[in-house]
Image (cartoon, rainbow, N blue to C red; front, side):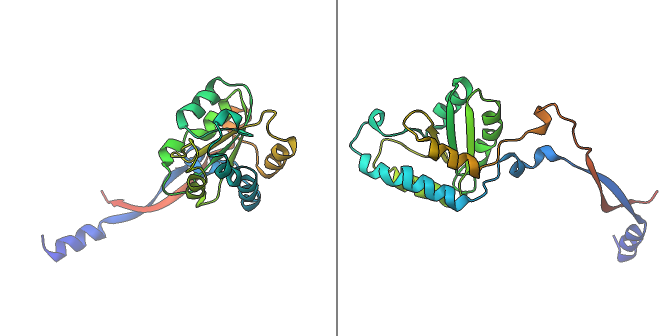
Length: 193
């Protein structure tokens, strides 16, 4: 093919604008509730729970001052069948945690019969949690830490967490009027006829 033929093909193309639908359901960042002060949440978790786990290495789990679950399957089973108050800490901003595995967590928490406070932890939290629980029988491989809010947890702790985290929102599941779809135009070209 000669250069003249290439130029003719380029000249024969015309500029067009194609509509592109802005889909709100594919924005996975919007599924996670906003944490107003992530540093405060991290310090509260660290001082109240993680710093004390090292001292409980020789104590059986059922005698701990809180009920913690870190196994993904146990957490999903509790969210599907349980009816209690829980705080679920998620390390969804860490690169060593599978984002595909965590995609379903916000919707699962929303649909659960449990009263779930879903908390995003800041980047680097997964490594810190793993280091804090190394001497315990718990393993935090999936970036999840569920804390049951039973009589072992003070109401003050629970209230402080709830004040810092926005509730889960899925407007397409609430039956409210949906917002109109945002249509934008994408500048592209197509061959002339």
